[in-house]
Length: 254
Image 1: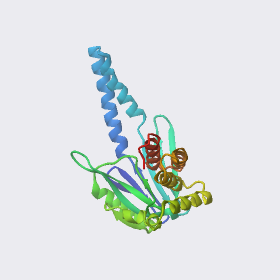
Image 2: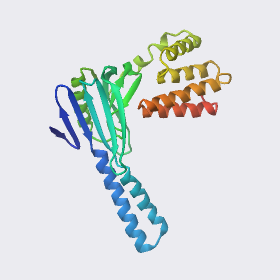
Image 3: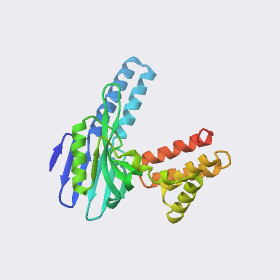
Image 4: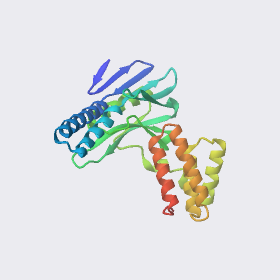
């Protein structure tokens, strides 16, 4: 068993497991501080609004989350377990290992420093699965983790450069007209009704064709895409579909 900063890693020839504790301890520390400060100052001053700090701290503490990521070659799938121990709530996200085509490092720019997280690339770049819900500092640590995963799965490590974005839409660029694209995605979701990406792309294509005439139909596909993404564990894509739905609703899309 190796300990990498706040992450515990277990690795055999058939199984690779990480347990992410960094965000857990940070949230527990910040939440506990808010709770103690809010209660102590509120009690001594009698100021009701100071108790809001305690409320915020309490919420942060009870919703602390431990993330366990397991790659299992015997079972053939990846499992992301997000467990909130204080409220006994667990969320499981599963993906087939055969769908993973690469590993990349996502970056979020901040005013003082940048933060990072490791992300899996699925279906040749059409989808991404963040291994953690939060970003954190330590690019070197993320690079080591990405390399361990890429080596274990024998997939491409795109590092901090990320998957080449121009490859994601290479198929769409072959369409000469918007009608061809619509037919493509209609055929795709007929063959696979659970294709969330296809539903979202079809909704966008319909908006591009005629955002007034096709508005209701396009919004329906975007709503379906959101539900499918959410059920499949793609939280970020579900949020993107929901945002596109809202933009379409106000006629600002297309």
